[in-house]
Length: 133
Image 1 (cartoon, rainbow, N blue to C red):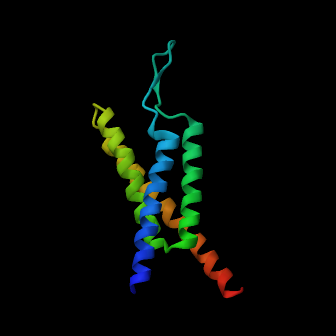
Image 2 (cartoon, rainbow, N blue to C red; image 1 turned 135 degrees about the horizontal axis):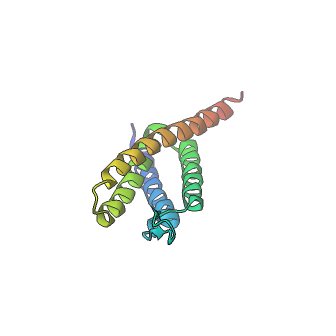
C-alpha cells in the first residue's frame, strides 16, 4: 500500500467516523428523555420511531457514499465502532440497570451487518459501473 493510498484511507476513515457520530447525534444522541404513559405507567423511549428511521436512513447514505469512495473493509468497521462507541457511551452514562451492555451488543451486530451489506453493494456497483457493464 503506497503513501497516497494510506493517506486516503486514513482521511476517509476519519471523515467516515465523524459523519457517523454526527448522524448519531443529529437523530438520537441528544434524546435522553423517557416517556411515561399516565394511564398505564408504561415507560418508552428515549427514541421515537421517526428518530430511529431517520438515523438508519442517514447511516445508509453514509455507508453508500463510503462504499462508493472507499473499500467496505474500511467502511464497515469504522462506522460500526464509531456508532457503537457513541451509543454505548451515552447509554452507559444514563442507565442504572446495566442493560445498556445488551443494547450495545445489539447495536454492534446491527451496525456490522448493515454497514457491511450496504457499503459492499455500493462498492460492487461502483466497480461494475467502472468496468463498463
